[in-house]
Length: 364
Image 1 (tube, one colour):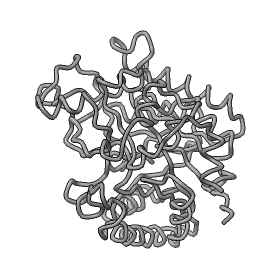
Image 2 (image 1 turned 180 degrees about the vertical axis):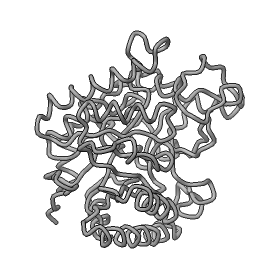
Image 3 (image 1 turned 135 degrees about the vertical axis):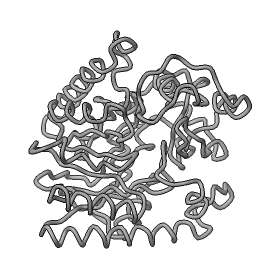
Image 4 (image 1 turned 45 degrees about the vertical axis):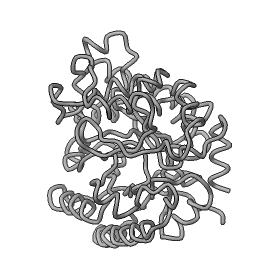
């Protein structure tokens, strides 16, 4: 099937594929620009984006602000006419400043999850930027759309529904993950989980349609989480999606901003290596089981650097490990001492591709 364009208000992507935001330092300007140049939507992750700036440890706020501008400019140079946005996590301690900096840089779109972005419209104000919450459940969709409607008299420009097969932090409890998709390596795609989550998707879509009718507009719905091939894309559109968000497939591309050793970790991973881990702030996440995570499991607590001030609800005295340390090590290629976030199908990667190859394989 030929895929339709993705229309986000007055922004039109020729190919309805959004490259998911991956931090720290995995989806920066080079990857986002390459995807946007191919006709998709390129997304830069703002999470600790300034980790390579010389003053990151002593002047984190300004280092991140500076890097947001640098990475956006890099992406825009690669794709002068493409759609380029940012993924900004609500859980960030400097969330508001990241949104302000992204808008100032020129972002077309802000995708926001890892919490409910209740204040995003207030921060964005009248800026010409599209706002897209990430939701995983009917409840979260209802809460955020109702809140935006009542408080700001507006609705979302797009909704991203992120399912239980995604990488990184997951918007589910451990119990929900077990219910929607048992982590059973012998039968991971079935066990009733996929069908059950498809029911949840339909419930979310009904809520979105309610607000689309109220505001007399179309709110595109984008499905994310474990989308790795054309069959997954076709399934998403069969469910009524307007587009898909894909992250893991873009890690093993030449253009991805991560170190080659991070990319190789995906290629080397087996299906059994993809596990659910607990992040320092208590959220479940999906990652590659490596020496670092094995050490955390055995020792319970791993010595870490002084607080980087990344997450609002992190207590350095209580955490089992520092998530910034783990993710920065991943981006820099120190894979044995890293937190290697990944999607459920990361083990399917067999070689380094180009962004164009990935886009063509997904779009068909």
